[in-house]
Image (cartoon, rainbow, N blue to C red):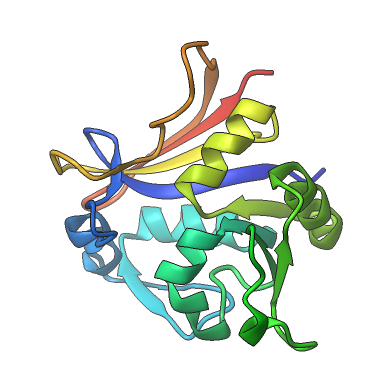
Length: 196
C-alpha cells in the first residue's frame, strides 16, 4: 500500500535551510562517503557511506510520485525539469506557471489544496510511495492526517536559525513511532511512523 513520506536533511536544532534557502552544511553528508548513490529521475550521483546508500536506495527506489509546494518548486527552478525521485510531481499552488504547462512535463499543478494533490499523487504512484518535498506541505499533510512517515537525515550541526521543518503545527501533540535508525557518515537517518 502506498505511503506518504517526507524525507529531509535537518540540523539538530530543527532547521532544513538557512533563511535564504541555502542548505550549507546540511548536505555535506552527500559527499562524505565512498559509495555511489544515484538520485532517481536526475543525473546526480552522491558519495555517501555504505549504510546511507543501502537505506536510501531502498527508500528512493520506492518513490512513485511527489508533492511539493510552489515556493520549493521555484527555489529549485523546477529541478531543471528533472524532479528528485523521478515520476510525476504535483505542485500545490495558487497560480499555475504557464511556462511549465506542457504535455511532456513531469509536473502537474494543483490549485485546489494539499489534500487533492496527495490524492492525485497516490493514484499516480500506484503501489509506490508519495514523497513530500516541502516543509510547508509536510506541515499541512501532518495537520490533515495525510502523512504516514517522517524520515529525518539528522546532521550534527546547529544552524541557529532558518526554515523549520516543524514550525507551524499548532499546539496538539503528534505522536510518532520509531521505525528505523541508521548511522551514516556525517548523518543519522531517523525514520518515524505517524501514529493516527
